[in-house]
Image 1: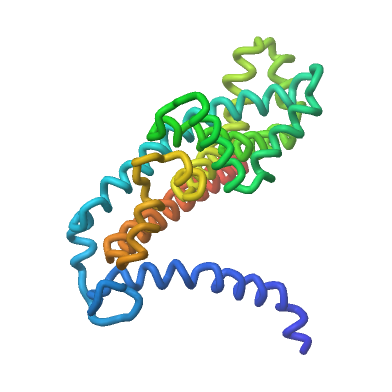
Image 2: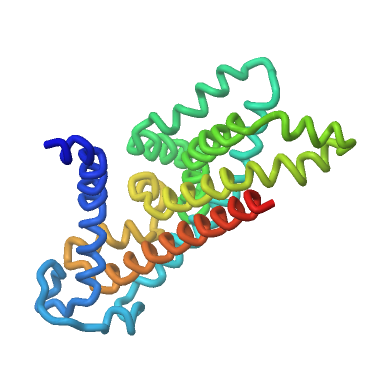
Length: 265
């Protein structure tokens, strides 16, 4: 019992992590399966066909590339706008600042089905054709909130004495921002961009409302689920997870090296 009390937090943490990663492990496991039927839900035999022929099923790679392209464009625009909004909210005092803070959180609190249907009504009333542009606009709208919250938290955690020290050393506003503020905020901006891309790539509800005839990867999976999801979907999903994991590990390694370098000096 003493041992259990001492390690209960670690045990709970491990149990939660196992619970979170079991579905991912199942998806990765079934990506090496050669299903006996069109439904890839039971193990039949080992096969690398899905990995050696990722685009073997029509529509898989095109929808995957569509989601990647939309995610990159929406993330870049939302990250730039969200970072600027964060700097304005943290560093400046202006009329309507409290209201702006409240409005920024509304897209995060609003159910996606409400936002998706509202944007659909807006585009239809404006007679704007549904497609890639409307999906990008919709994704930018809900990504910005997450970017603002992430970058804003990073800005609020900065030590103002670092910028004051730069100004004391006769650094101008541009030099202070370039060499002090921006490098310190950059990890938060990159984290917000990764979060925004994940949200955009993963989104189904808002995309489904505003895509028209456009087929993104989540929409393709939803349609394929009715007739049997191909094994290539499992392989692509596993590939995305591995790439995301590598990005996080590389970022952690670079951060660790920087900390060791600072401590050494």
